[in-house]
Image (cartoon, rainbow, N blue to C red; front, side):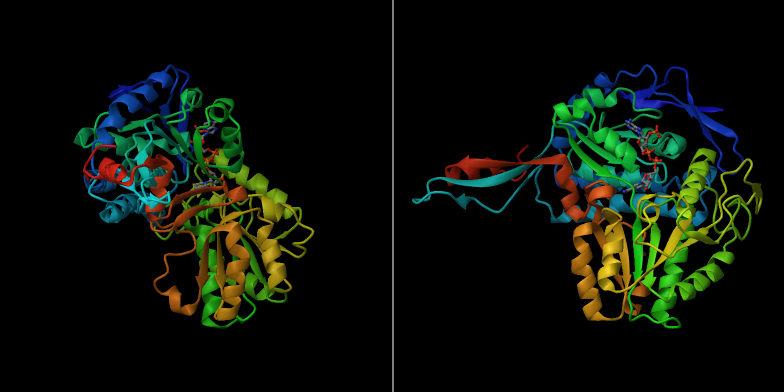
Length: 521
Ligand code: NAP
């Protein structure tokens, strides 16, 4: 079995026993092991601060953008090995593409966005602003990278995308990173860092990687470091209340889980193209990556009386999805990442089933195309119908992290919005309507509760990037349950890794301080 070492302090370092084991999603066999035991996290963070930080801060935005492009191109030359690894955690070709090439796409997107940045190592706002009667005293903001390390903790479902979207922003901002992928899928992140190390494309200390538990990493973070976390709401809450992080006021950005919705508006009748688009998207969201997406549609809200039409249409689509080993021809949905994740999803389906009826799928099905649920982490798509969403609590709060969604009816738009809000803040809701007034009402009622709203109609469907896809140009995140964080959003994403400092003084002097456009920050 291969051992995945840690890339820290400028080289590869083995962790001490005991190791954690990664298993194959289809066969359940052990495939790799890793450990962070014995690592000196205080030293690792200090290495990033003293080696990677100064090197990145000395680079202009254009130079950092060129670095992102080089990383993207280098990774792009090794795609087959990445897809091979993705297959071990159950990814179909499409699932792998979303994670791997979608992740690489973020690097190029941010390199391109950098064209809007000044020919400098830092940014300023427009200014100076006059702060005195005679105009001899003014102010402006200077925006510089923090001097610490961006600690990036990622979730298991996006080992590539999660790492690369965060790196795109932190490297462009001028901060070095320490990446901690989720242990059960860390092999892909490990392979990518191996490729970058072999190609020698990164300044020393700009990127470090640990495979295994976080150990005492968080204890050594300072106010100049940033913690970017993606994962479950439970872990997010543990991290947000970590004593050291609280005491040192470490900046934290959390992307957590989310009970996302798709809402069919009253104007959309069965048999119309928009109705069909809605059904297609819900079925797609349930099955792509076997429903292991933070953005996946968990609640399907439809006008009361139309539940049966939706349930029938979804059952028709889901019945056609061949589930099994992605290596078998015709299989469209693979297993979950491992048996623990599958068992957790099954347990959460049982909680949902206490207040909703399973109308499609058997959580205990054992035989699949080319595999068995005894050894592989298979779970077929499970659709539930909740007839009393007002009385229900689990359907609005429990994330069954797999191919699982619940249909529920609403009386009117106010009721629909009240149900959506019971998710406690979400990453995304899709609204399907052909009526402008309805789109307007729902947008303003739901925007405060979401990081993203997809207002879907026939006109947008042809080129839509889909409910589940977070785009680098637009905000990804969400309030409340979704973590309260914000990533991507174009150049807004750089804000996590920089500090905006107000400069006050004589206006000419303020101009002079930032005048040499390539001056160092
Ligand atoms: P998880 O169990 O919360 O773990 C997430 C990450 O946190 C992993 O790297 C994990 O490491 C690490 N971790 C766990 N406990 C920690 C601690 N005490 N200190 C520091 N790090 C700690 O989540 P997951 O099972 O990997 O991912 C699935 C969840 O992530 C789902 O709920 C999904 O909705 C959510 N997610 C959200 C987004 C988003 O953008 N909002 C994106 C993707 C996924 P180990 O693996 O070593 O335990």
